[in-house]
Amino acid sequence: MSKQEIDRPSLEYNLAGGLLLTLTPTDLERLCSGIKMAGYEHACVLPFRGLTETLDPLRPLTVIHVEKAWNPTPHDSLPVATIAGLAGYAKRFLGDQNQPPILQDALFPGRKTCEQLFQALVTTFPGTKFISHEIDFQTPRNRLLIEINEGIKLTSQELIEISHLDDFRLVFDPPIYFPLIKSLVFRGNPPASQKENGKNNLMPFLVQAELKSLISTLPKKVISPIC
Image (cartoon, rainbow, N blue to C red; front, side, top):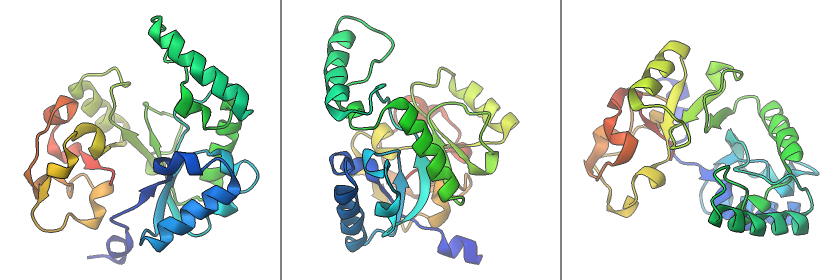
């Protein structure tokens, strides 16, 4: 086993899981410090409000993955963004198919600020990989992971073919595709390289799981989970 495989983390914490604690630098630093104390060394980071002035709150952790903000409003002001988020629920209820931002999206800065922050993150942490929710032809392939999701309007076979032709890796988020995540039973320890190595993925280690949706139709060799 190479040194790279030994050093590669098997667990990381997506800071979006503590989204309410990402609004200010102080709260975000508390979140990162608490995560570190809980035993996590590595993090996945998004363009949070708590990073608009400085990236220092991330210092306790090693950033290895970066994502873009989910669906930010146009507004940097939190009160104005909150109003826009509330209006988003009404728009969706009335049939707006454009997925207007809702309250969770208001917790991110405005769209322009999110894009600036994203660029700052990928520049400041050059070893990170970008987890994209859409097909991205601009990002270098050695830094790109495409997360399988319903927003990608391709059949499983089309997605596989494009991934082969354009040489990017496919990943998925287990809680999304395994609704009964607590019922998963594993044999042995999944390899530390499972996040990116398509040949050493989680599937061979599953003893019991109910696979649904797109995942059940994809060849195992192209699936790598995000844990």
